[in-house]
Structure formats: C-alpha cells, structure tokens
Length: 272
Ligand code: HPA
Image 1 (cartoon, helix red, strand yellow):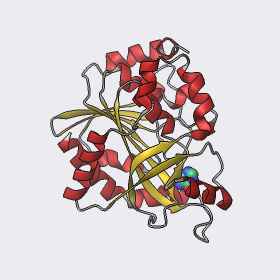
Image 2 (cartoon, helix red, strand yellow; image 1 turned 90 degrees about the horizontal axis):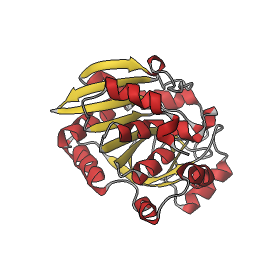
Image 3 (cartoon, protein in one colour; image 1 turned 180 degrees about the vertical axis):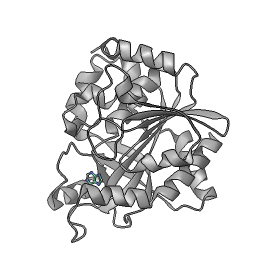
Image 4 (cartoon, rainbow, N blue to C red; image 1 turned 90 degrees about the vertical axis):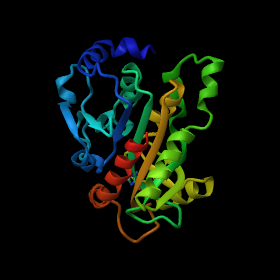
C-alpha cells in the first residue's frame, strides 16, 4: 500500500500548518496528556480540523496536535493515537509516524501505559523500552510494509535508538527518577489478558504488556527515524495482584506519575 498516496491531502495540509521542521515528535499514550501542561505550547489544533485524520475514541486520548518550543527545540506532540483494537485499519495506527516522516522529523518518542509483568515492577514505575515484541501484529505489519527491500529489512534490527535511550537514561539520572528497563510486549486487545496469558508472556521475556506502540516503532525503524519509548507501568498485569484491571486505574496511575513523566521528558528535550 502506498501510504503517502492514501493520506496525501492530510499530509499536505499538515505540511502547510507545521512548515517549521520540528526536532522531535512525541506520541502521548493514555494518561500522558498532563505532560502538555509542563511544555511551552505555541499552537494546538484538534485532529478533527484536518480532513481525513481518523478520530481517536479511547478516553484519555484527546486527539490534538500541539507544537511546543522548549530549550531551543521545536516539538510536535500527538495527544492521542489510534489503536488497532478500536477497529482502525493498521495504517491508521501508524499515521502519527507517517506524519513524523513527511514533516522531516528525525526523532520520535513514544509513550504508553502498560501492565507490569516483571516481578520488580510496580504501578507508577517508568520503564525505558529495551525492545518490542509485536508477534500478534506480524501479519498486519507485513501487509502494510508490502514489498520491502533487503536494505530496508536491515532496519528492523535493534529497534529503540541507543542514542535516544542513552539520553533518556541520562535525563532520569539528572532528575533522580528511577528508570526500569524492559521488553514491551504488544497484545492486540481489546480485552485485557488472562492470568495464563501473562504467565506465558513472562516466560517468553516480556516485562510489560500493552496494546499500542509496537507498530509505530516498526515503521519508525523502517523509515530511519530514531525512536525511543517510555512505558508508564499503570497496573500489575492480570493475575499478578488480586485487583481487577480497569482503564480508570490505568488513567489514575498515569496521572499520579505525571510529575516524573514531565520532568523526564523536559530534561530529555534539553539533552537532545
Ligand atoms: N494490559 C494491556 N494493556 C495495558 C495494560 C495491561 O495490563 N495496562 C495498560 N495498558
């Protein structure tokens, strides 16, 4: 599929609106919207103002594009993403990355809420993503990518950018924020996992589980965009605590972690 053709009028209008080439794009996950308050926002435009921009339906994903100016850098922020579990076609789930590419932005920070699997993780922790597993999306992604060249295949190695991860680690150190480190395990959703599934993912090497981000990271790699990801551990994954999982808990924990998230991202922008 020729994605640039599919979204051509949307991309053209975004190019007109955001002609100043930002240094960084950030995709905000559930509950990360609070980060907006800590940034120097110069422009905010709802996705609905752009014809052809698919609408977000999940609570906590507002659907607003922001431009911020911070520490001498310009940052484009996607407040809200489209998930596969909402029924969006796979191409809509990576639209934010496609826009990042066509605006010529070289760095992408992905954020998300995730359930903690690693026994040392607890709600409120921030996890730097060491790698992604997207087994459940392999089929959809291969259809999306179509005929990739051998050269492009090489881009799948080592997903998160070591340089950006190092800057996130440095930012965390400077802000005295403990940072976990682990594998983000993508699941399709829309329902949370069963305890048995969590045990399986644990044995296979997953440290945290979530329903987004993996497709974004794959495409960023393919298009040579430096990508890094931060998960907010919002809950113990299914079966690891007696508490029933809920989207409200996910949002609440992400909100409680807001101060740390904001400090980390602000310092990261400074170091970029
Ligand atoms: N599972 C899947 N996705 C999630 C979770 C979870 O436990 N928490 C936040 N997003």
